[in-house]
Length: 157
Image (cartoon, rainbow, N blue to C red; front, side, top):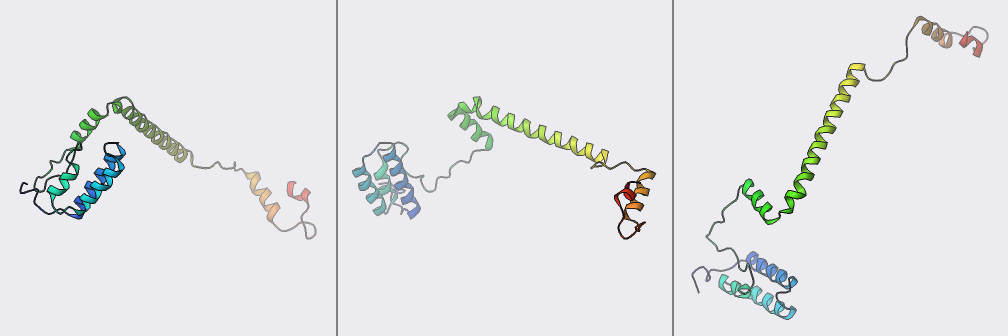
């Protein structure tokens, strides 16, 4: 057993191994009885060596070794590895994103043009104003001419 294998494992490390075992069971790599045995052994394990023993025969087994820093990838490296792993992105996702971006720009431009037109024309339409309008208003809302109620004829006259 190596020095790293003799270090104590944490609860988070045990949970990671248990989730890897469940994933292997759903992939059909281990049977249900064997899953129960391995999960039990993983939960009882105290060191990294004992945890690694439960997943040593599975692909991509084990935990990241403590003390070894994982190299962080840049956004460009992530994008390149994503495209290499999923080449359908070039055929589907990128054109969809390009069309979506073009539609957003088009809607924004149309909205801006409409706002400028509305601001230039002054907003809502107004009724035409002329001298005849003020006389009609005076008669309609002024004091009644004959009696207490103005007649319909006096309004339009």
